Amino acid sequence: MKFANRCRDITSFKAMDILAAAMELQAQGRDIVRMEVGEPAFATPQPVLEAAQQAMAAGHTKYTAACGIPQLREAVAELYRRRYGVTVAPGRVVITTGSSAALGMVCELLLNPGDGLLLSDPGYPCNPNFVRRLDAEPQRVPVDASNNFQLTADLARSHWQTNTRGVMVASPNNPTGEIITRENLVALHQLTAEKQAALVVDEIYHGLTYSDTESDATDVASILEVTDDAYVINSFSKYFGMTGWRLGWAIVPEVAQEKINTLAQNFYISSPAISQYAALAALQPETEEILEQRRQEFQRRRDFLVNGLREIGFGINHLPAGAFYVYANVEKLTDNGEGFCWRMLREQGVAFTPGTDFGVHNANKYVRFTYTAEMDRLEEALERLAVGVLSS
Image 1 (spheres, helix red, strand yellow):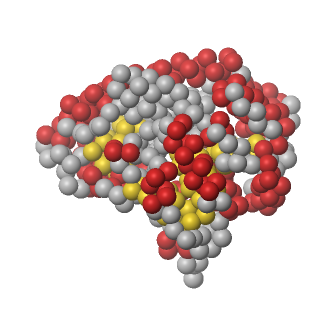
Image 2: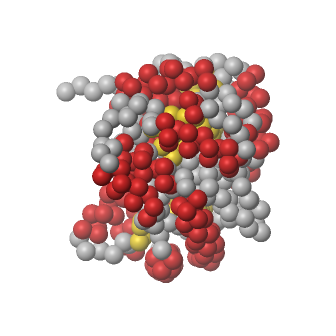
C-alpha cells in the first residue's frame, strides 16, 4: 500500500516514544519515575468533576455548535478581561478538541502548499508536523540561552524567506519554560504587520509562571494586550489540569471567524460536550484558588529539581520562568543526549525526554525534565540519576 508523501516527513513524538517504553517497563513490574510528558500529576479539580457529573445527569451528551457552547465562549472571553484587561468578543473564541486541534486549524487557515512558517528551534515537537501536514515548510530558527530560547523579531527578520507567511511562538514555551517579553511581542507584531503575515502565539502555559531571584519573572503578557490581529492558542490541559478531557481554544481575528467555523464544522464537528460543561467550572473562583495552590507547589518542585540537577552536573542557565519544564545541558555528562535518556530509563528507571525531540539546534546537548510528579518522586529521580551519572 502506498501512503501520501507527507507521511515520510512526519516525525515521531519522542516524548511519547519514551512514555510508551516507560509504561512497558512498568507493566513488567519496574518502578519508573515519570518525567517525560507534560502532564500535571494532580487530579482534575473536584469542582470540574462535579460539573461533568451534573452535565451528564442533565443530558448534555450530544453535539454542540462547532465553535463551542455560548456559555464557555463567553467565560473564556471573561477570563481575558479579568486576567489581562482586554475585551474579546465571544464570537472570536473557538473551543477546540485540545490545543492540538486549535494549532492544526490555524495552520490550515493560513498555509498553502509551499508556504513557510517561522518556528523556534528548539520548540514544541508537533508544530513542524502541523505545517508539514499541509505540504508547507517549517522554517526553524535556532535559539539558545543568549536570546532566552525565544524567537525574537530580529531573528525572525533575518530568517525571513520569500515564502514565509507568518511566525509561531510560545510563551512560556516548551521545552524551556521561558517567556517572551512584552517588548518582543510588540516587535513581533510590528514585523508581521509590516510583512502582511500572520502571528500565532501559543499561550497554553499561561497561569504557570513564577517569580524568583534568578529570572525575576512574575506574569506573562498576552499578545491580545498588543493586537487583536494575532492568533492565540490556549488549552484546559496544563494550568487547568484537564489533559484527558481534550479541550482547548483559539482566539482569532474577527475577519477569520467565518472561515474557522467552517473548518471546525468539517474537521471536528464539535468538541466533547461534557468537557465543555465541565470547563465552565474550571473558570470559577473556587477552582482558581485550587489552581493557585498547585502553581505554588509547581514552583517549589521546580526549585528543588533545578538545584538537585545542578549538583549532579546538569547545566541549567537559570530557573525557568514558567510551564513545568527544565531544559538541561548534558555536555559535561555525555556526548549523546538521546542515548543518555534511553540508558537512564533502562538502567535507572527514570524517564525524561531528549532534546532531539524539540529540534536540531544543539539538540543532542540537551534533555528535558518535567517537574509535574510528587516531591518524593523527584527526590527518587535525583538519587537514581546521581548513581547513573557516577557509573557512566
